Length: 312
Image (cartoon, rainbow, N blue to C red):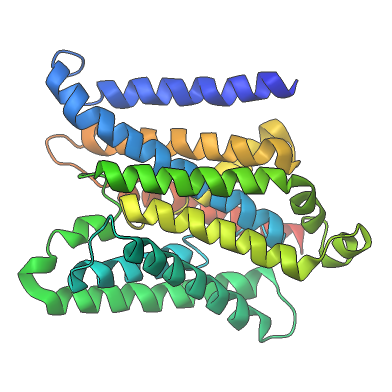
């Protein structure tokens, strides 16, 4: 049964790749366009989507909150703010300093949201969402202020901030993919701990799990995966929110299957979103981040409504 579920997700992933390679006015007729433009872009969409899907599954599991997502928690905004600062400071995108700074931004923003939500005494879904929205809004405003002040040299960064997968450096793609792969492998190795955390801190403790230590570990893995995704494609929201929910309907709640399924689902979803952005609005091209916001915001509102009714 588990094998058939994996085959389903990777079949969807393969179909998304074919759609992405064919998307565009030229279709399959121009091999140069396919090899030089669409293949790198498809690889970037696959990596970014997988990283965000993985991060979303980890956040939702460790926080036991169905509304958790790197974008909503402010993780992506923290990473993007750090990336923009690096760009304008002259730090190369392939530099280890760049990746460390982006990770620090993601990690700091996530823990700020978590700390603000805990100030009320009890970590509730509403408090976490509100804290994440506040942190994300502040960081997004800060990024816009910096870019506006930078003038003409920051123009190209607006595409990055809005989640465009236009120019992908092979070195950045390789390093980011390795970070995501290591994060996913460590998360899979700790799948029992993640399942225990999904039952709540008290239940996890009685099962022999240290909740605080595991929370820090999974936060670190989710932030690393998110920062690696942001390094490639900027701010792209709702992938980490949608794909774990969709995957959970097919695989069930066990992290052993859910984590790789969410990563594969995120890769397929973002690849299709990028293909839609460059083909449906031709000759104009819409960043993948904008396409995901158009699709993800209604999903988030529906999920928020469903969650509030379940607690009524």
